[in-house]
Image (tube, rainbow, N blue to C red; front, side):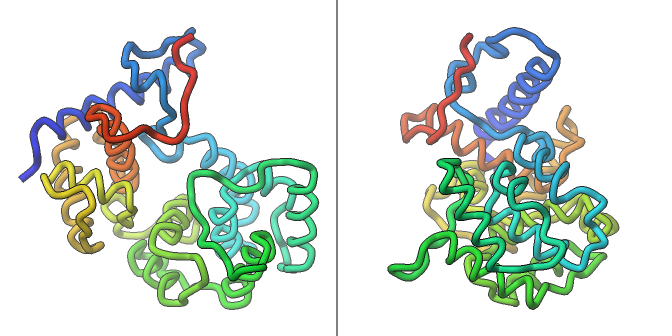
Length: 277
C-alpha cells in the first residue's frame, strides 16, 4: 500500500517543480518558489524532455535529420554515455564511426580545459592505466560495430536487446535512458508500451521504497518496480500530471528521493542551485 504522506509529497513536488519551470521560462524574476529546498538545490524537471541536456541532445544528435543514419542508434548510446551537449557538438554526429578520430577530438576538447562528461551519470572505471577517454571510445566500438536490433513496437523488448548485447558500461540505467530518447524518434515512436513502460533506476528504486514503506537500500526487480510505477502513475492520472508517461514518473520518483533526503536530514543533492534571487 502506498504511503499517503509520501504520495502527497510527490504530488506537491510535481506541481511545484513544474510551476518553477513555467515561471522561469516565462521570464518571471526569482524566487520562483517559496520552497527553500527547491530554491537551494538542482532538481530535474517533471518531464524529462524539458531538461536542458535532453533538449540540447534532441536538437543535436537526436535531430530528425539523423534518424535514418545507419549509426543513429549506437550514436544515441554514445551520446548518453558522454551526456554533455557541448562535447557532443564539438565531436559532431558520427556519420561513420572512427574510434581514432573520436578519441582525438575528445582529447582535444578535454585538453582545452572544458568539462567533457556529465556529472549526472557514472561511467564504470576502466582498467588501471587506461585513460577514461580511451576506455569510453573503446567500449563504444562494441555497439557501433554490432548495433542492437530494436523492436519498433516495444520499448521493453528494445531495452532488453541492448542489455543482451552486454555492451561494456551500458547497464540497465543507461539503456533505459537511451530508450527514453529513442521513443521520440521514428525507431520507437510506434511502440505499444510508449506510455506505460520505463526502466527502474537506482534513484527511482529509492523513491519507490519510500512510497511502499521499505528500507531505502532494499532492492527490487525490474518487474516489481514496473508494476509499482504503474500503480503510482494511476494515482497521478486524476492530477494535473496526467500528461506524464511512465519514464517521467520514474524520473519524478528519483527527484522525490532527493527532496525527501533533505526533508528528513538524510543528506543533500550534490548540485546546489541559486534560486533565491
